Amino acid sequence: MKKIIMFLLCLSFLVQPIQANDDLGLQAPSAYLMEYSTGKVLYEKNALEKMFPASMTKMMGLILIYEALDSGMLQLDEMVSVSENAASMGGSQIYLEPNEMMSVSDLLKAICIASANDAMVAMAEKIGGTVTNFVNQMNEKAKELNLENTHFTNTTGLHDDEHYSCAKDMAMIGQELIRVGQEELLAITSTYDAYVRENTASPFWLVNTNKLVKQLEGVDGLKTGFTQEAKSCITVTAKRGDIRLISVVMNEADSKIRNAESKQLIDYGFSLVSYVPIYEVHDIYENVEIKLASPKNVDLVFLEPVGSIQVKDQVVSIKEMQLKITASLPYEVHEKIGEVTIHFDDGTVIAADVGVNERVLPLTYFDLVLSSMASLLTN
Image (cartoon, rainbow, N blue to C red; front, side, top):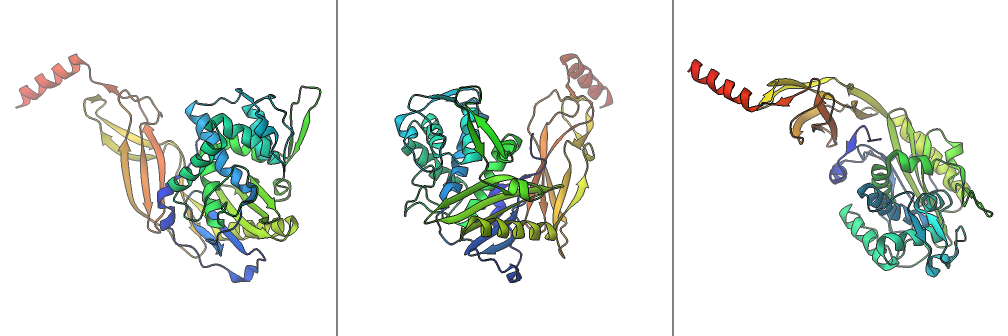
């Protein structure tokens, strides 16, 4: 399902952070908290410091997987042949065998739920041809997202001194992953346990490495990480009502502290922000004239709710609204024909789909002749 309000990623860096609350007293050397749809920064602590991301790395690989699914290059029921290289991966794994065949769907579950390194490498080879090519694609995507403190040398997050990121970049990667993966992704990352090879003689039980999906209201993702060098880290997303938050903590001493401080960040964030509705579904945006169409004038209506994210003690107002029609005639009722970009005075920007509330058809040749004759008679 399409996200109700899409954040224009390229403008996220214009959003000014709220002053960090030092009273939170986090032990995490680095942390970041943001509102998903606008990118508003609610808390940050050493958020640009380069650190090892461990298995949070897999979020970038998942972005590329979901892009391949969205483009049709990849199908969920497609079978992937496991290479010896993929089967040899250590760390978290589902013990894939060389030449074993597993569906993209099951490999995704293994990556998202159990952080399986062998499944991640199998998918990297499927999409990139080689792991090296896939890592190059990950780094290209990092450039596209304007991530200045991120560089990948592998797909899994296994330790390498040249493999690094930061809390802010991890949050931005999480934001893009949710944008691309949408409900399909979150249905997997919110699953506490599942199976792969379920209908075989050797089913494998997956248990979510993110225990917060059972422990904290609204949590439905996103990715944990641990190596001796990275220590314990996690990117968490939670949704309550119309608000979604993303938090990151890195280099925590252990998973208990990591989870406790993530809970603290998420609860703190929800105490700060509220959703203020502006337009409901089918509210009129404006009446517009459509050339060479019948009817000539029609109401444009919003096809999704529109609202602003208000932060405690701050009032946000609409500064400017811009309409862009992208579809060609005919227009069907409540079918997307364009979008309205809404600029707020705090620098955030959202876009909402619009359509028409009655059918609009192109003028026929006969209509054009009659129109021309009427014009001549009135002149």
